[in-house]
Length: 394
Image 1 (cartoon, helix red, strand yellow):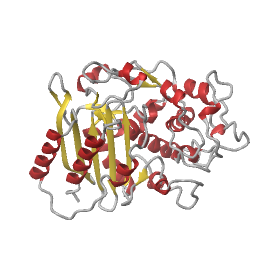
Image 2 (cartoon, one colour; image 1 turned 30 degrees about the vertical axis):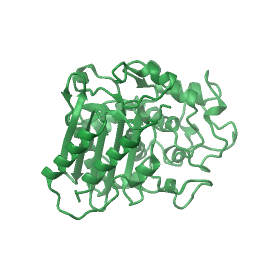
Image 3 (cartoon, rainbow, N blue to C red; image 1 turned 135 degrees about the vertical axis):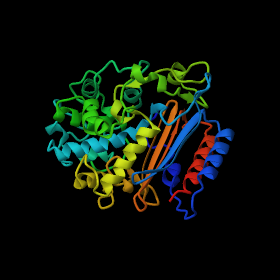
Image 4 (cartoon, rainbow, N blue to C red; image 1 turned 180 degrees about the horizontal axis):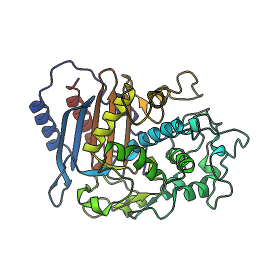
């Protein structure tokens, strides 16, 4: 199935979580990563390691376009799947700083239409429930798959889609879009709820979410390769996306070209996973997150960054919640070594970022291939090997 979420939970908890003290040797690290690429099944990938404002290492390997032998570079642009949700986190915190709402505001105090869980119509869904994945809004497969389109630009506006599927007055409303759990009572990762969180910002800002992020984040950091929708002017930098092992599913067959590259697609619920960026831009963004943690950001006050980083479920753990999910922050999660992480997978792409605030080091890995396949042991092992190499930086 197409998924835009924290995949491979064991990997997500262990990746980038070691702590080595050896001095790093850039040439040796480069050589080791090249060896991993040569024996891997990846078309190409890029890595970056940043400490505070300094880039310790940034390199790409393989191809952004295998057929035409176009090298993957630091300026190659590709979607980063669910890592996009970290942008929603920044935007929510910024919206709170701007006085639009608080994290405890009921979503129906913001929305131009009403949303309630039909199983518990009198219960209140709040902003905090959306970014901790405890709202009761779930990724019903029919709704979620329906958010994808084989086109370059979504043909339906975000708010129109959300109203149609989540409001009882919507044309495509279904109770299957909600779990039989009260808001705040159970953790269940939800892309649709994440997109709804972004829409709250859009409503209060009185501008589309993509314009809000452009104004308050991308322009400020000069992230010139970062955008939400297909950009013809940047298309020469776009990586081709590939499936190493194509799932035997009807909708996947519709996505695929004969060479295992993925056709152009987009998602109506774009904030939950459609951000396109380069490893160069993403490195600048992660450096900014580190600045925010240390109170050195000019984009937003430290107190609002702290909202992003604060663990939310430690003191109020919902019933039947997996212990790893008690590390939930604002969309971000903490791995078992205390590092702030988010990863994501979509057709033809895998991305992961990790931040060690003890040492102010961020690590990034972008691959133009999906690792969430039926036969992905080799792919996962290659990712682990890359992670081990990057741990030489401390």
